[in-house]
View 1: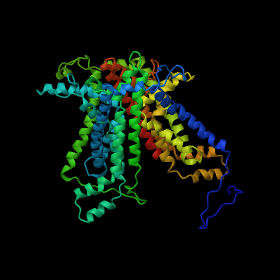
View 2: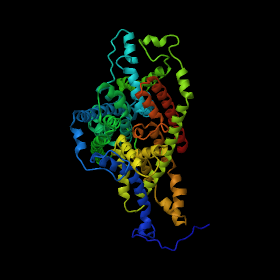
View 3: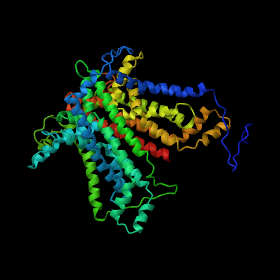
View 4: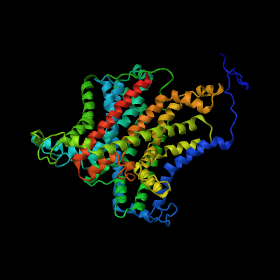
Length: 587
C-alpha cells in the first residue's frame, strides 16, 4: 500500500538535501496558549511562594489571611541580620558547607577513580558502594549517627569503654555535622566524576605515555585536569545542598550549639508568636546565597574547552594500582561501613532494645535485652499505616504529576517555537537555587491566602514536592527528548496524524525509558523529603519523614529508630523495584 501523498511540494537545497516541509503557522494566540498555561502553573507553584517570601521580608504585617494585606513597607526585618545569632548562623552555614564539600569531594572523587579507572578488586561492587547512601535519607543517617556517637550513651563510646578505652567520640559538633553531611552527599560528586572519567578519551593519556610521562605525571597533568569541571561543579552542588540541609543541622548541630540558617528559620517560625517576617528576611538571604552558588556552578559546568569525547567509541584506560589494590578496596568498604552498615546496625539495636537506657555495652548481650516486640507494635499501629499510606500516595502522585508536567515543559522548550519557551525553562530551574525550607514557607503563605481550600490536604504536599523537584524532573526528561530525532514525530504528522496523536503514539513510547526513570526518581525523592513539608503538614497528612522527625523532636528516640528502620525498608523496596523495572525497559 502506498503512503498518502501531500500536495505541498518539497523544497530542495542546492546540494540535493530536502528541507523539512513548511508547516502552516497557527494564530499567535493559539500557538502561545499552551505556554501561557504552563507559565501560569509555574507562577502559582514557584513564583507566588517567592513573592510572598520577599513581601514578608520587607513588610510589617505577619498575617497572611488576606492576600492583598501586606502592611507597610519596612527594612526593620533586616535588622535581625545584624544580630549575633543570625551572623553566627550565616558563618556556621558557610563553614559546614565548605567542610562538607571537601569531605564529600574527597570520598566521591576517590571512589569514582577506583570504580572507573583502576583494577581494584571488586570494581563493580565499588560502584554500588558509591551510590548506596542515596537510599539512606540524611535525616535517618543523622539519627543513626546520633545513636552511634552520642557523647554519653553512643554505641561506639560504650564499645570503647568496654575494651578499656576512653569514649571520645562526640558527633554533636562542627566536625560531626561535616562528617555526616560529607558521608551522605558523597554520591553526588561520585556520580558526576565517575561519568567524566568513564567517558574520557584515552588518546591524550596514550600520547603522554608515548612521550615518556610516568603514571603519576600522566594522572597529575592529563587525567585529573580534564575532570576539573566535574569536580568543581559537583563541589559547588554539594555546597548548595549542605547549606540548605535542615535535618542534619537540627539533629546533629542544634544539640551541639551549632545553629545554621535553616534551623534559625525553623526556630523563628515555631516561636510563640511566630516571627514570620524575620524568618522571611533570613530566607531571602539564604536564597540569594544559593542563587549565587548555583550561578557559579552553571558557569563552571557550562565550559566546553575540557570536552574530550568524540564521535567514535572510547574505552577509558585502566590504571594499575599494584600494591595499593587491596588498601584501596579496604578504603571503599570502610566508607560503606561508615555510611550504611554501622548506621543500619545502630537503628536495629535501638529498635530492638527492651530498655531505652544502656549503662554499658555488655548490657546488649544480656538475656531479654533485645526484642522485636517494639517493631511488631509499630507495624500494627494504625498511625503507622496512615503515614505509610500518605507517603505512598504523595510519592506516586508527585511522580506522576511531576513527570507529566516536566514532559510538557521539555516538549514546549525543545519541540516548539512557542514564544516564551526560554523563560519557561528559567522558571523551571529556579527551585534549584531556592532552599526547600524557603519554598515550603512560601507555599504555606500562598495556599493560606488563595481561595483554594487545599491547605491541610495531601494535595498541598504534592504541589510542594512537584515544585521542589521540578529541576531534577525537567533535566531527566529534557536530556532524553533532545536525543530523540524530531523527524520521527514529523513523519507521523506528514502521514496524516494529528500532532497530539503523534506525540502519544510515537514520541512518548520512544521516551518510555527516560520517562519511567524520571518517574522513579521523583518517587524516590518525594519519599525522602522532609524540609519542604515542615510547614505544610497537619495531624491527618503526616508522612513517614515527618513521623520520624516528630518522634525525635518529642524525645522518643526508640520510636524514631523503629520508624527509620522501616523507612529504610520501604525505600529499599522502591530501589529494588526501580532496578527491576529499569532492567525490563532496557531489554
